[in-house]
Image 1 (cartoon, rainbow, N blue to C red):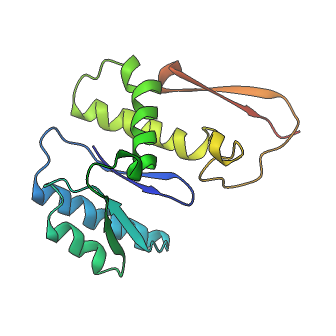
Image 2 (cartoon, rainbow, N blue to C red):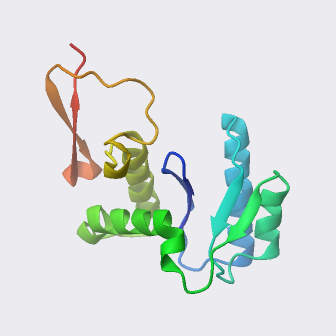
Length: 162
């Protein structure tokens, strides 16, 4: 699974998933993310990643061409990548540990659905219970509604506008 996190908003960008990531695959995912960010008009200044061998110089060059500074995490410093570790723990504990994934297409669907929930509905305790990609102000009163995510695995509660 290859994902990107915007630190300021803790918003997740799911780039892709595969059982056997290669240098070519990882670099292509980077290109696609850059294209998507450009289409959205988003400008990111930094890319932080670990020192895994699957992140070659061609991967870093994609981001450098967009004037993003690539920062490598220090050796043996798991807390340096805390946001990524938090995302991995959340997606595993709240989602993947409770599902039987049938195939790669199913995994893509589940991760897209959970990422959308994570970015647009799931409260984040470290940021005053605010959601990362808030599109509008949520009403403070009104009838409480429930929306099922991933077939009812997750229940999302929200207030209907009065």
